[in-house]
Image (cartoon, rainbow, N blue to C red):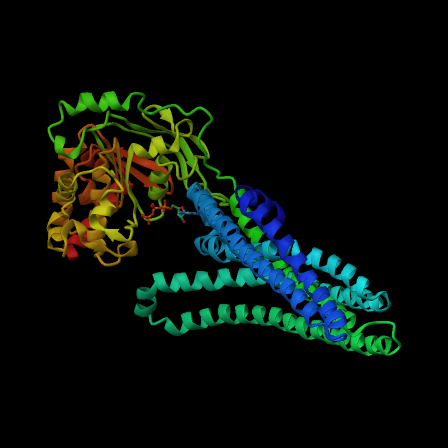
Length: 599
Ligand SMILES: Nc1ncnc2c1ncn2[C@@H]1O[C@H](COP(=O)(O)OP(=O)(O)OP(=O)(O)O)[C@@H](O)[C@H]1O
């Protein structure tokens, strides 16, 4: 998994990788040459007192060292370039893939793990890749080359290399294998900490209002302790690695000196050769150590690569059809024609009339036992307002989600402009929709940047017009900077009602063919609600307007009211006839009348 991910993503970095190969080769060979030169200086320069030889060979050593330094710097630079580039590409791919997820994949993964996969997990892969690029060529060359050079210096001591290297490999290998299962737990603990932190930050007001700080602290402590415990378990295993490595390392040095000294004493070996042999042994063991460090990173990076690949390989359940049918075959032409008769041309051309039809729609959430909607059929015609009312949990938001194809129906079909939403491209569908969700979300930026989500090219006049209709112009004008007033992430620096009105204005800026208001007037007082609906009528023209509401007063004048109960339509018609014919509707009206009287 790790190899596949790295290989497929390294392809665009063939040039830096080739540079790394060449430079690593140069750097390693120069490193291997230096101890031999050093040995020669001792044996042929220092021992016979040949100053000229020392200076000559010293100059060669200096030149080789400079080559070594330049090559090593080049390797580090190219490795950082390639690994940072791969990490950037991975983050972009994960981001793009998540952007194509339907609500189903989003909820099955969950936001916190998607965030840690795109940050922490990518970082694990990047760190390993950086190390790998820096050492992958030098480690084998250094080991093989070091052994050859050491043998050249003295074959009699070579058995020491044959003992030390496998011993180190076995010790480290057995520890790394034990670490493996802990790494997955470690990444899962990161997810858990992220999840709780995120919940607490977003729900901080609720936590405080319900005096749940202690409870939340305990919850965070649990996750934090699990994370710490996992990190400690890994740390404990890790802490054994270096002492053991050093034990082998130092044991081998002592053995070289002990046996080498005897060989020098017996005249079987020169002092310079002993020094060079010692350095080669150090180099071999150093490369084993780097190999060990890398092999310790591999399991964690493998887990991370698996988690990243899970996201990249996740197939969105909602995809565009192979041959999408355009909802509006000639939008340019239609827009131009309509612009000539548009009485409010300053807010853009009204779209061609497009209706919505639910045809025998049933829907169950993935994994749920019971359907949320059953046999729902109705037509929301262009130029008319269709209201959907029903008790909480009746399926109103679900119904709106199906128009936007956030989910696919289980049975039946949702048609937009006479086309099944599954037969049109999602972007084409969304371009025709102005959705104001139940929980409106604003992005960090300004009022204007948020409104221009509706239409990036909208002029300031068009934005003010939308704000005026949404009954938001007064409070935006009062904000410091007006259209340029800052909006905090999630829109937390404006009130709930203001957020709703800005979200409505955002939908209006788009001038869509279909408006979907999901309980979008609930935070408005009755007078503002009435003014907004009156103003809306002047711009919705031929648009199909679907309004989900809890309050009867919001939908009383709708052309058609759909009454939902337990996911089924139990009544449809206008207010006056429904009061007579639909007991559920009559009950809702009566209960709200009682509440108003009581108020
Ligand atoms: N993502 C989901 N996964 C599983 N079940 C869900 C999901 N969203 C909603 N439901 C269930 O579907 C049912 C209908 O929910 P929906 O949000 O459509 O109701 P609603 O009529 O809009 O309610 P409200 O007026 O409270 O917003 C509820 O029983 C709810 O528990």
